[in-house]
Length: 374
Ligand SMILES: Cc1ncc(COP(=O)(O)O)c(C=O)c1O
Image (cartoon, rainbow, N blue to C red; front, side):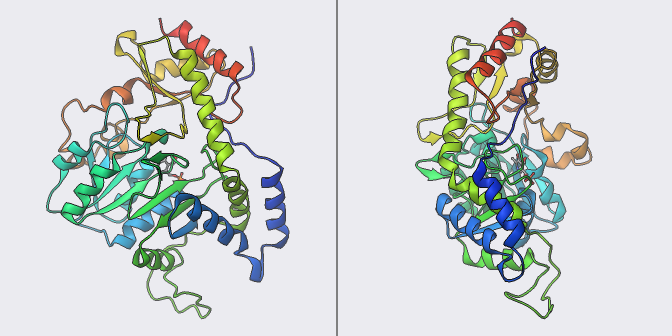
């Protein structure tokens, strides 16, 4: 059989290797932070925000945001029901209650009307997710947040390079967070970034992410109990090289999507990632949702692809339906019996979208799909 086509994979050049080698040799003692500072500055410039804080992963960024907002027991945070668990788990870490809202069936991001239906006197924040590179309706979400004085957190883990009305993903919340996990569009192995324009939140985050130390503390006189969430210089060096190449990275992602869209164009029983007129989608993962009438759910489709040497991933499941949230029926109390997101969660599959994809490999995947989906 032909080689397995992996579902993801980074694009690493000599630049990443050189910077990482230089960090390994030199980023110690008084130079320990130089790559982190350069990466943070370049990333903040790219997103168009004042502050960027490099972190060990994006989950830390969500946790730190909620802690900096002062969210805790008795508070509710509205989250999409269909997303990766990392968007929601930090709500539980801080002792608050996640409240599941429905997603839009086309963009796969938080539906503002459903968010409105989830508001209570205990609501303190909304976490929107730019799923697979799509953009949530941040204009409406901001309106809701402002009317109720709520914090808005943009989980842009999967959306570096996407834009809404010309503005970068990650710039719409009180904080925005990104993931640089090895499968993402911009990688540092593991890694994340929190961005914000809010001075007060930034100062809180800087203390909370370093065990509550005051700025430049050398005396270990911690002012509060915090967390330890830092990115290593070696990771930051790789991240700097990647952000310096961000335009070619995103261009390649879009090319991969366009190969799929061109080759699948004839089929009216498969839906792909949406790109409304005011959105520039960076298409982290090319994703299909197949018509229910075809009769193959996501796990069956994945299996059929696997037997043809093609790796894939399931669309995220409805969080209210997985064991991790089985003991939290109150989180699902505002969801309709059949949410609009149910279809994508049942019939959605992420196709191979890594930087190793070529037009020929896309053709192999599409021909397998045409064979399977009859
Ligand atoms: C939507 C979403 N949020 C948050 C995360 C968490 O990112 P990390 O694994 O870097 O903590 C991910 C990671 O895959 C994600 O896809």
